[in-house]
Length: 144
Image 1 (cartoon, rainbow, N blue to C red):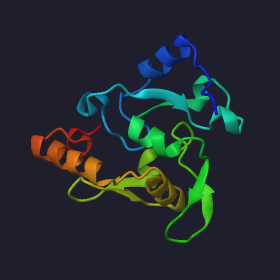
Image 2 (image 1 turned 30 degrees about the vertical axis):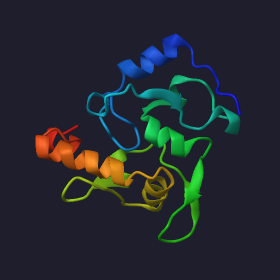
Image 3 (image 1 turned 60 degrees about the horizontal axis):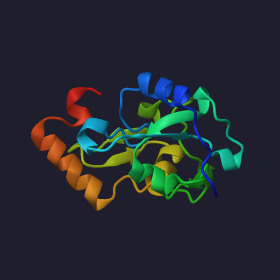
């Protein structure tokens, strides 16, 4: 499926309104070393509008797993639930950091399903988060 073009003025507005971290995994752009992408929360192919309320910053890792998804299975219950919506839901309601800061923990069925579907605890990102903790630059330590 072809990607819907997001106008420059909307991309700029989304970036300006963001703390420059992935809306899903909270990885800061400055620590990833690559620009975050402006993308549809509800994909255009699933009826999502190309408007500010349906756009967010997302890292390429999360975006490659999210793709056209709007729902996923909660691994704890097996129920199909909606993925986290960063414009309508509070991150801290659905996610928490593990004590050592390396893993994201789903706190709700939505959080569990999003962590699993977006592979938010892949071994490489877990290793990177460990380095952020050691450097004192992890979002958990900086209050981001």
